[in-house]
Image (tube, rainbow, N blue to C red):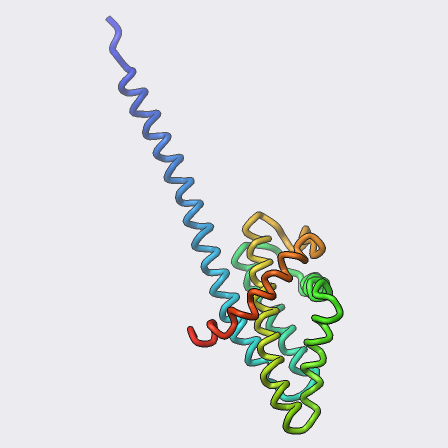
Length: 184
């Protein structure tokens, strides 16, 4: 007489399927959680970029913003367990920024050096540089989160492939930055 083991097999298969579902949900929660932590890193660094943009010395504000962006990339790399290279990160961020074209770069540099004009230039520079710095930092952070979320690294990041997305994020970020300041 054979024992009916089909119920046991069904139960084992059901248990295995449940384990697989739980693992998939765990991975999904991990990705979501990690993405949320990445966005929080970006938000904090956007606030730092706003502060760096207020530095009253032309040129020094740009260097301070670049330092914030490198710090953000280092933090995102740590979060996504991606090897970080400062030299490579500098090249990639520079390449992304050149994707905005000469008008975009000229606006950022011009806004910094307008601070040399007494009173009016200083006032304009103190308004425009932080806003541009924050929008650039926000857009850059979003681009790298997307890249890291899909398994990318700094070594296989292709700025040319994401330039359109970066420009879109930059334009959108210009509208979001005032809201980020109010939320903090």
